[in-house]
Image (cartoon, rainbow, N blue to C red):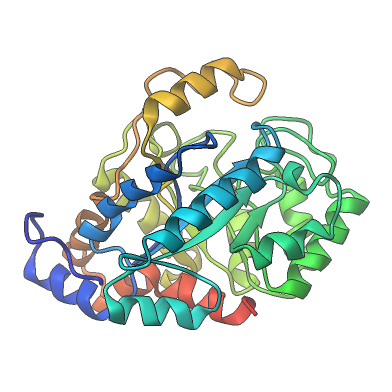
Length: 336
């Protein structure tokens, strides 16, 4: 793995870099509906784009919480039935084995604490099933923390218990989608590296889903990373071009260093499904902030990003770190 499909246009330097590096997309979504496990086959586009590791979404607060466990069952069953091309991640070593075998390594993530059913003990169950990072609240305030589109009163007692349990079992703590106060409380008390799996700098583009310099610095202080996403309305005026993503990466690197920046594109393969869901849930997606026709950067953007970074004078080691090495470091530190 790490090799870009010969049909894709990429500079030789990018092909070589991908071949010897670990390329990691920390967040993507194939479907939000149960009974559609075959949608995982869409991840072949990641493989063809040279990506080695993908974090696949299995649930978020705006969806029915019971769907999370159903999606995990669907996805695990499908991945195990297609083990020639995919490897379900348990340990970090599984990623290295998958790359050598030419397989795409897949792990799961959850956006928000509602799928816990207000039980911190659910964290260890989800970890055993392949969930490797989770954020606390998805846009709206829940029983754990405040959302970025809602009133944020900080972490609750349950939120603090979940934070402790995540650190105990080795699940990476994520602060994307939550409010500033809740994020800072997590970042100030965490004993392990914390991530923003898919959040962009607010200083580059003003949006309530984007994050402050203060939060980015606090994240880096934990040893964690900020993952830049490819969502047009969080990057600029619905602008999801690779050049705009690199602008956000460049800002983050100048603020916190290349060793604390990564990528979580947040690409949704079934965009009509997502558009319908967003329209049907204005409480989570205020229409003024989430207009129709949101542009998303696809997996094929990965080699473009690397080529643009190299053209800007980034060293190959810095590009390799941003494209996956930094997330690998955090996973090694946190996963058990």
